[in-house]
Length: 309
Image (cartoon, rainbow, N blue to C red; front, side, top):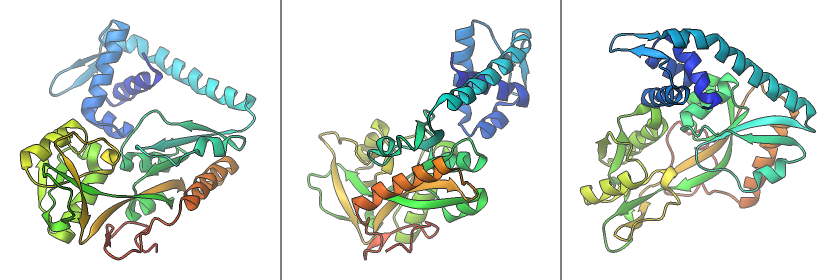
Protein backbone atom coordinates (compact mmCIF):
# COMPACT_ATOMS: atom_id res chain seq x y z
CA UNK A 1 0.00 0.00 0.00
CA UNK A 2 1.39 3.40 -1.02
CA UNK A 3 0.36 6.96 -0.19
CA UNK A 4 0.02 7.57 -3.92
CA UNK A 5 -2.61 4.82 -4.14
CA UNK A 6 -4.50 6.30 -1.22
CA UNK A 7 -4.56 9.62 -3.03
CA UNK A 8 -5.98 7.84 -6.08
CA UNK A 9 -8.68 6.28 -3.86
CA UNK A 10 -9.72 9.70 -2.57
CA UNK A 11 -9.89 11.13 -6.09
CA UNK A 12 -12.13 8.31 -7.36
CA UNK A 13 -14.28 8.54 -4.22
CA UNK A 14 -14.81 12.25 -4.81
CA UNK A 15 -15.49 11.96 -8.53
CA UNK A 16 -17.29 8.58 -8.52
CA UNK A 17 -16.06 8.28 -12.09
CA UNK A 18 -12.77 6.69 -13.11
CA UNK A 19 -12.49 8.78 -16.28
CA UNK A 20 -12.87 12.12 -14.47
CA UNK A 21 -10.57 10.99 -11.67
CA UNK A 22 -7.89 9.91 -14.16
CA UNK A 23 -8.12 13.27 -15.93
CA UNK A 24 -7.82 15.09 -12.60
CA UNK A 25 -4.80 12.99 -11.63
CA UNK A 26 -3.25 13.30 -15.13
CA UNK A 27 -2.83 9.54 -15.53
CA UNK A 28 -4.27 6.95 -17.87
CA UNK A 29 -7.65 5.44 -16.94
CA UNK A 30 -6.43 1.81 -17.13
CA UNK A 31 -3.47 2.67 -14.88
CA UNK A 32 -5.78 4.24 -12.30
CA UNK A 33 -8.04 1.19 -12.34
CA UNK A 34 -5.05 -1.12 -11.84
CA UNK A 35 -3.77 0.95 -8.91
CA UNK A 36 -7.18 0.86 -7.20
CA UNK A 37 -7.39 -2.90 -7.67
CA UNK A 38 -3.88 -3.27 -6.18
CA UNK A 39 -4.94 -1.17 -3.19
CA UNK A 40 -8.04 -3.30 -2.69
CA UNK A 41 -5.87 -6.43 -2.74
CA UNK A 42 -3.52 -4.95 -0.15
CA UNK A 43 -6.38 -3.88 2.11
CA UNK A 44 -8.33 -7.09 1.62
CA UNK A 45 -11.62 -5.28 0.95
CA UNK A 46 -13.49 -3.91 -2.06
CA UNK A 47 -13.59 -0.11 -2.04
CA UNK A 48 -15.89 0.45 -5.01
CA UNK A 49 -18.79 -1.22 -6.77
CA UNK A 50 -18.30 -0.79 -10.52
CA UNK A 51 -20.42 -1.41 -13.55
CA UNK A 52 -20.45 0.07 -17.05
CA UNK A 53 -22.55 3.05 -16.05
CA UNK A 54 -21.69 3.92 -12.45
CA UNK A 55 -19.16 3.77 -9.64
CA UNK A 56 -20.16 3.73 -5.96
CA UNK A 57 -18.33 3.34 -2.67
CA UNK A 58 -18.82 0.08 -0.83
CA UNK A 59 -19.64 0.25 2.90
CA UNK A 60 -15.96 -0.47 3.59
CA UNK A 61 -14.88 2.30 1.20
CA UNK A 62 -17.28 4.76 2.86
CA UNK A 63 -15.97 3.87 6.31
CA UNK A 64 -12.30 4.08 5.32
CA UNK A 65 -12.48 7.32 3.33
CA UNK A 66 -12.26 9.77 6.27
CA UNK A 67 -9.38 7.80 7.78
CA UNK A 68 -7.50 7.90 4.48
CA UNK A 69 -7.97 11.67 4.28
CA UNK A 70 -6.56 12.06 7.79
CA UNK A 71 -3.60 9.83 6.90
CA UNK A 72 -2.80 11.88 3.78
CA UNK A 73 -3.05 15.13 5.77
CA UNK A 74 -0.63 13.73 8.35
CA UNK A 75 1.79 12.68 5.62
CA UNK A 76 1.76 16.23 4.24
CA UNK A 77 2.33 17.61 7.72
CA UNK A 78 5.27 15.23 8.19
CA UNK A 79 6.86 16.46 4.96
CA UNK A 80 6.46 20.08 6.07
CA UNK A 81 7.96 19.37 9.50
CA UNK A 82 10.88 17.47 7.96
CA UNK A 83 11.56 20.40 5.65
CA UNK A 84 11.74 22.65 8.70
CA UNK A 85 14.56 20.54 10.18
CA UNK A 86 16.54 20.49 6.93
CA UNK A 87 19.31 22.92 6.19
CA UNK A 88 17.89 23.90 2.80
CA UNK A 89 14.58 24.13 0.99
CA UNK A 90 12.99 21.22 -0.82
CA UNK A 91 12.69 21.36 -4.62
CA UNK A 92 10.47 18.87 -6.47
CA UNK A 93 11.74 17.89 -9.91
CA UNK A 94 9.88 15.75 -12.44
CA UNK A 95 11.36 14.22 -15.56
CA UNK A 96 10.52 11.81 -18.37
CA UNK A 97 13.70 9.82 -18.96
CA UNK A 98 16.62 12.26 -19.06
CA UNK A 99 18.30 14.56 -16.53
CA UNK A 100 21.50 16.60 -16.72
CA UNK A 101 24.42 14.70 -15.23
CA UNK A 102 25.57 15.68 -11.73
CA UNK A 103 22.47 17.80 -11.11
CA UNK A 104 21.87 16.51 -7.57
CA UNK A 105 25.51 17.12 -6.64
CA UNK A 106 25.46 20.66 -8.03
CA UNK A 107 22.28 21.52 -6.16
CA UNK A 108 23.39 20.02 -2.82
CA UNK A 109 23.86 22.78 -0.28
CA UNK A 110 21.51 25.05 -2.19
CA UNK A 111 18.39 22.90 -2.13
CA UNK A 112 17.29 19.37 -1.33
CA UNK A 113 16.36 18.00 -4.73
CA UNK A 114 13.55 15.44 -4.66
CA UNK A 115 13.17 13.53 -7.91
CA UNK A 116 9.52 12.73 -8.50
CA UNK A 117 9.08 8.95 -8.65
CA UNK A 118 5.96 9.27 -10.79
CA UNK A 119 7.58 9.12 -14.24
CA UNK A 120 5.03 10.69 -16.58
CA UNK A 121 4.97 11.94 -20.18
CA UNK A 122 6.08 15.46 -21.10
CA UNK A 123 2.63 17.04 -21.32
CA UNK A 124 1.80 15.77 -17.83
CA UNK A 125 5.06 17.05 -16.37
CA UNK A 126 4.41 20.51 -17.80
CA UNK A 127 0.87 20.54 -16.41
CA UNK A 128 2.13 19.52 -12.95
CA UNK A 129 4.58 22.41 -12.87
CA UNK A 130 1.70 24.66 -13.87
CA UNK A 131 -0.56 23.45 -11.05
CA UNK A 132 2.22 23.64 -8.46
CA UNK A 133 2.62 19.93 -7.69
CA UNK A 134 6.16 20.16 -9.12
CA UNK A 135 8.66 23.01 -8.93
CA UNK A 136 10.65 22.00 -12.01
CA UNK A 137 10.40 19.47 -14.82
CA UNK A 138 12.65 18.32 -17.63
CA UNK A 139 10.36 17.63 -20.58
CA UNK A 140 9.45 18.44 -24.17
CA UNK A 141 7.18 21.44 -24.27
CA UNK A 142 5.32 23.58 -26.82
CA UNK A 143 4.93 27.34 -26.87
CA UNK A 144 1.20 26.81 -26.36
CA UNK A 145 1.91 24.90 -23.13
CA UNK A 146 4.05 27.78 -21.87
CA UNK A 147 1.17 30.18 -22.41
CA UNK A 148 -1.53 27.86 -21.09
CA UNK A 149 0.24 27.02 -17.83
CA UNK A 150 2.20 30.29 -17.45
CA UNK A 151 5.56 28.59 -17.70
CA UNK A 152 9.11 29.47 -18.66
CA UNK A 153 11.38 27.06 -20.60
CA UNK A 154 15.17 26.87 -20.74
CA UNK A 155 16.85 24.65 -23.30
CA UNK A 156 18.74 21.86 -21.54
CA UNK A 157 19.48 19.37 -24.30
CA UNK A 158 18.50 17.97 -27.67
CA UNK A 159 18.22 14.42 -29.05
CA UNK A 160 18.82 13.84 -32.74
CA UNK A 161 16.33 11.13 -33.56
CA UNK A 162 17.16 8.23 -35.85
CA UNK A 163 15.42 5.42 -37.71
CA UNK A 164 15.55 1.68 -36.99
CA UNK A 165 15.19 -1.03 -39.64
CA UNK A 166 15.96 -4.64 -40.51
CA UNK A 167 18.47 -3.59 -43.19
CA UNK A 168 22.02 -4.92 -43.22
CA UNK A 169 23.61 -1.48 -43.27
CA UNK A 170 23.05 1.75 -41.39
CA UNK A 171 23.03 4.13 -44.34
CA UNK A 172 21.29 7.51 -43.95
CA UNK A 173 17.56 7.55 -44.70
CA UNK A 174 15.62 10.47 -46.14
CA UNK A 175 12.94 11.76 -43.77
CA UNK A 176 10.13 11.13 -46.27
CA UNK A 177 11.06 7.42 -46.38
CA UNK A 178 10.75 6.88 -42.61
CA UNK A 179 7.57 5.37 -41.14
CA UNK A 180 6.30 7.45 -38.22
CA UNK A 181 4.48 5.56 -35.43
CA UNK A 182 1.56 7.34 -33.71
CA UNK A 183 -0.21 5.63 -30.79
CA UNK A 184 -3.98 5.76 -30.19
CA UNK A 185 -3.40 6.46 -26.47
CA UNK A 186 -3.10 10.23 -26.22
CA UNK A 187 -3.04 10.03 -22.43
CA UNK A 188 0.37 8.39 -22.48
CA UNK A 189 1.74 9.55 -25.84
CA UNK A 190 0.25 12.99 -26.53
CA UNK A 191 3.59 14.82 -26.71
CA UNK A 192 5.11 12.23 -29.01
CA UNK A 193 2.01 12.08 -31.20
CA UNK A 194 2.02 15.86 -31.68
CA UNK A 195 5.72 15.85 -32.58
CA UNK A 196 5.41 12.82 -34.88
CA UNK A 197 2.35 14.09 -36.75
CA UNK A 198 4.00 17.47 -37.39
CA UNK A 199 7.14 15.72 -38.65
CA UNK A 200 5.10 13.54 -40.99
CA UNK A 201 3.11 16.52 -42.26
CA UNK A 202 6.21 18.62 -42.96
CA UNK A 203 8.25 15.87 -44.63
CA UNK A 204 5.66 13.68 -46.31
CA UNK A 205 6.68 10.68 -44.20
CA UNK A 206 3.90 8.08 -43.77
CA UNK A 207 2.17 7.70 -40.40
CA UNK A 208 1.65 4.22 -38.94
CA UNK A 209 -1.22 4.05 -36.41
CA UNK A 210 -0.60 1.68 -33.49
CA UNK A 211 -2.51 0.93 -30.30
CA UNK A 212 -0.16 -1.12 -28.13
CA UNK A 213 2.24 1.46 -26.71
CA UNK A 214 4.87 0.25 -29.18
CA UNK A 215 6.44 3.67 -29.57
CA UNK A 216 9.37 2.25 -27.62
CA UNK A 217 10.64 -1.01 -26.12
CA UNK A 218 10.21 -4.58 -27.43
CA UNK A 219 6.86 -3.77 -29.06
CA UNK A 220 8.58 -1.04 -31.10
CA UNK A 221 11.14 -3.56 -32.36
CA UNK A 222 8.28 -5.89 -33.33
CA UNK A 223 6.70 -3.08 -35.38
CA UNK A 224 10.01 -2.48 -37.17
CA UNK A 225 10.24 -6.16 -38.10
CA UNK A 226 6.61 -6.30 -39.27
CA UNK A 227 6.78 -3.11 -41.34
CA UNK A 228 10.07 -4.06 -43.03
CA UNK A 229 11.01 -0.42 -43.49
CA UNK A 230 12.84 2.23 -41.43
CA UNK A 231 10.78 3.45 -38.46
CA UNK A 232 11.32 6.68 -36.51
CA UNK A 233 12.67 6.06 -33.01
CA UNK A 234 11.34 8.16 -30.13
CA UNK A 235 13.55 9.87 -27.50
CA UNK A 236 12.54 7.39 -24.77
CA UNK A 237 14.37 4.73 -26.78
CA UNK A 238 17.29 6.99 -27.68
CA UNK A 239 19.91 5.05 -25.72
CA UNK A 240 18.33 1.59 -25.92
CA UNK A 241 20.47 -1.29 -27.15
CA UNK A 242 19.12 -2.60 -30.44
CA UNK A 243 18.51 -6.32 -31.01
CA UNK A 244 21.11 -7.99 -33.23
CA UNK A 245 18.74 -8.13 -36.23
CA UNK A 246 18.08 -4.37 -36.30
CA UNK A 247 20.23 -1.39 -37.29
CA UNK A 248 20.21 2.36 -36.69
CA UNK A 249 20.05 4.90 -39.54
CA UNK A 250 20.73 8.65 -39.42
CA UNK A 251 17.79 10.62 -40.82
CA UNK A 252 18.52 13.37 -43.33
CA UNK A 253 16.65 15.99 -45.35
CA UNK A 254 15.75 16.95 -42.66
CA UNK A 255 17.07 15.51 -39.38
CA UNK A 256 14.40 15.50 -36.61
CA UNK A 257 15.47 16.89 -33.23
CA UNK A 258 13.62 16.52 -29.94
CA UNK A 259 14.39 19.26 -27.41
CA UNK A 260 14.47 18.93 -23.63
CA UNK A 261 13.44 21.98 -21.62
CA UNK A 262 13.74 22.83 -17.96
CA UNK A 263 10.26 24.13 -17.17
CA UNK A 264 9.47 26.49 -14.30
CA UNK A 265 6.54 28.73 -13.41
CA UNK A 266 6.79 32.33 -14.57
CA UNK A 267 5.77 33.60 -11.16
CA UNK A 268 8.10 31.22 -9.30
CA UNK A 269 10.69 33.14 -7.31
CA UNK A 270 11.66 30.77 -4.51
CA UNK A 271 15.45 31.07 -4.16
CA UNK A 272 15.95 27.30 -3.98
CA UNK A 273 14.01 26.72 -7.20
CA UNK A 274 15.85 29.51 -9.01
CA UNK A 275 19.20 28.13 -7.80
CA UNK A 276 18.35 24.59 -8.91
CA UNK A 277 17.30 25.84 -12.35
CA UNK A 278 20.49 27.88 -12.67
CA UNK A 279 22.59 24.84 -11.71
CA UNK A 280 20.94 22.69 -14.39
CA UNK A 281 21.38 25.47 -16.92
CA UNK A 282 25.09 25.78 -16.10
CA UNK A 283 25.68 22.06 -16.56
CA UNK A 284 24.12 22.12 -20.01
CA UNK A 285 26.03 25.22 -21.10
CA UNK A 286 29.26 23.42 -20.22
CA UNK A 287 28.18 20.54 -22.49
CA UNK A 288 28.26 22.90 -25.47
CA UNK A 289 25.94 24.20 -28.17
CA UNK A 290 23.36 21.57 -29.22
CA UNK A 291 23.50 22.92 -32.77
CA UNK A 292 19.84 23.70 -33.32
CA UNK A 293 20.78 26.38 -35.82
CA UNK A 294 22.55 23.87 -38.08
CA UNK A 295 21.24 23.55 -41.64
CA UNK A 296 19.10 20.47 -42.20
CA UNK A 297 17.68 20.34 -38.65
CA UNK A 298 13.92 19.93 -38.20
CA UNK A 299 12.03 21.21 -35.16
CA UNK A 300 8.25 21.52 -34.78
CA UNK A 301 6.86 24.95 -35.62
CA UNK A 302 5.78 25.49 -31.99
CA UNK A 303 9.04 24.39 -30.37
CA UNK A 304 10.11 27.32 -28.12
CA UNK A 305 13.75 26.75 -29.10
CA UNK A 306 13.21 26.70 -32.85
CA UNK A 307 15.05 29.98 -33.40
CA UNK A 308 17.98 29.02 -31.13
CA UNK A 309 21.22 29.04 -33.03
